[in-house]
Image 1: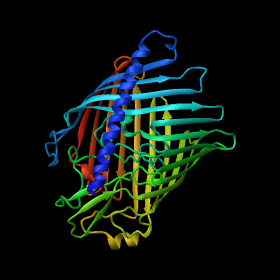
Image 2 (image 1 turned 90 degrees about the horizontal axis):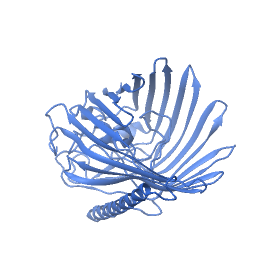
Image 3 (image 1 turned 45 degrees about the vertical axis):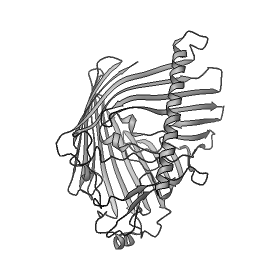
Image 4 (image 1 turned 90 degrees about the vertical axis):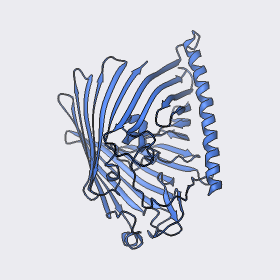
Amino acid sequence: MDKVNSEDRSQKTEVRKISYLLSLIFLLLSVFCLLPSAFAGELSLQGFFQTDYSLRFSDNNPPQAKKGNLLWGEERVELKGSFYPPKSKIGAFIKSDFYHDWVETEFKADLREGYLDFTGDKFALRMGRQIITWGVGDLLFINDVFPKDWQAFYSGRPLEYLKIGVDSLKVEVYSDLVSIEAVAIPFFEPDALPSPGRFHSFDPYPAVTNRATGKPGSTFHNTEYALRLYRYIGDFDVSVYAYKGFFRTPGMKADNFNSPSTISYFYPKLVVYGMSAQKSALGGVVSAEYGYYDSRDDREGSNPGIDNSQSKFLIGYQKAFPGDFTLGLQYYGELMYEYRQYEDNLPSAFGKRQQLHQYLALRLTKLLKYQTLKLSLFSLYSPDAEDFLLMPEVSYNFTDNLQAMLGVNIFGGSNPNTALGQHKKDDNVQVTVRYSF
C-alpha cells in the first residue's frame, strides 16, 4: 500500500505540474486576447476577484483543526477564456483559478476546466477537463455519477464549486430518433469529502492510526465509461443512463472489523443503470429519476466495508409563482438490497442504516428589488436517520459586477454517525464578495 500511496503522490505531482503549465499558457493567451489583432473579435476573456470566508459558530473544533473555527478562507482570482472562430468547427475553452488558502497557508492554482471542441452538423466532440452534469435532481444526485466537492458544499462556498471537472473525452451525436452523449474518463477522480482538518466526521475506529488509501490506477482496464440516451417522448423529456466505473466515496478494508489494527481505503467497482423524465404539469415542472447501483465487489452484501447494491429514486416538483417566488419539493429514497446480510455482518462500531433511507428536500427562492436581492433556503431532512441540513442565504448585486453573499449552514441529528448528524458541531456562517469583469 505504501507503493500505491507513492504512486498516488507521483500522479498528483504530475497533475499539479500540468495544471500550472496550462495555467501559464492561459495567461499567455489572455495577454494576446488583450492585444489588438485580427483575432480580437474571436477571443474572449472574463473572470472575477473573490473573497470567501466560512467560520464555525462554536469553539468546539475537531482535534485536527488547522485554523480553529475557520473552515474556509481565501482570496481568489478566476480567469476564463474562449476561442471559437465563427467559421471554424474547432474551438477551445479554459478556466483557471489562482488563490490563497488561509487554512492550508499556501498559494494554489486550480485548472477547473480546459478543453477543445470539435463540432459538426450531427455530432460534437469535447476533449479535456470538463464539468459534466446529468440527472434532474436538485442537489440530490442519482445518475450524475461524476465527482463532487462536498467540503466546498458544507462550508458554504458558491454552488459552482460543488462540481469537480474530470479529464475526459465526450462525444455527442444528435438525431431525430435519439441523441447520444458518451463519456470516457481515463483518470479516476474521487469525491472531495470534508477533511478532519476542517470538519467533525464520524470515525468508527478513532484509535487506529495505521491507515492507507489507494485509488484505481490509470490503466485502460480502469477507464470509466458513461452513456446517456435522450429524446422527447410526447411531452416528456426522457433520458436513459449507464455507467461503469467506481464508487466516488471509499470503501474500507480491515484486518479485523471488530478490533482492527490496520485500515485501508479503496474505491469499489460500480455499475449504474438509470433513467429520468421531466414534464410540465400541475402548473410547474414534475421530475422523476431512478438508478440501480450494482455494487460489483459486494453483490452478496456480506462485506461491511462496501456499500450494498441499491435502488435510488426521486420525485420532484418545481413551481414559479407571481412576484418572483419559486418553490421546489423533492422526495429521495435509497433501497438497500441483501439487507439481512448487511445486518448479520455489521460491526458494532458502525452506525446502522435503515433498509429504506429517505430524504425530503425543500427549496424556496424569492427575488426582490428588481431581482438584485435574492433570498433562498435549501433544506434536507431524513426521517429515518433523523438528521437535517438548513442552508439559508441572502445575496445582493450592488452593481452588474459586484455581488455579496451571506449564508448559514445548520446541521442537526440525533446520532453522530449519520451523514448530516456527524457535522452538527460544524454549523457555520459564510461571507462571499465577488467582483466580476
